[in-house]
Length: 146
Image 1 (spheres, helix red, strand yellow):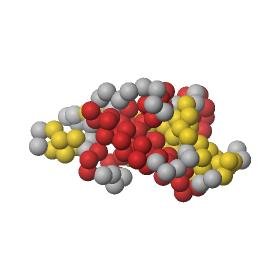
Image 2: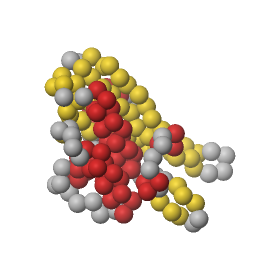
Image 3: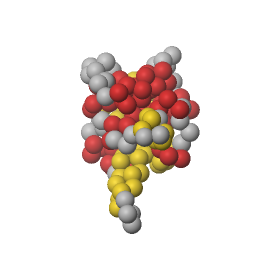
Image 4: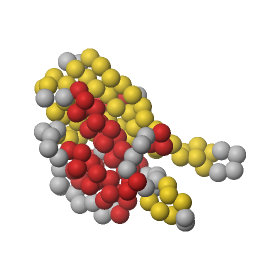
């Protein structure tokens, strides 16, 4: 692992009104820095990302994602783990205190839809030395812009 590489992540949930209904955009932004220089910055929409079937919930005959801010934060962390592995980073920073504390075993995961995400992220972290650390929202906004 390279001690000079850091990964920053932030999930987002945007709601906008269409002609007849609300539309949700759930996604995340990932920023990779090496020695204070941004070497990778990308925004992902969850609907455009291939995810395991078990991350989808079954409602009313349709398989769809449950859109919450915490789902977006877990998605961000999952994508940050992928970036950390690719760039050999050993620290991921997130501004979600809840998710960071859940991943580090300080908070329990109570919501059923988040338990699946939690297990998926823990599995992605297993066998790595990657640490997940909370960071101020102000710093994330400066880097990622939302």
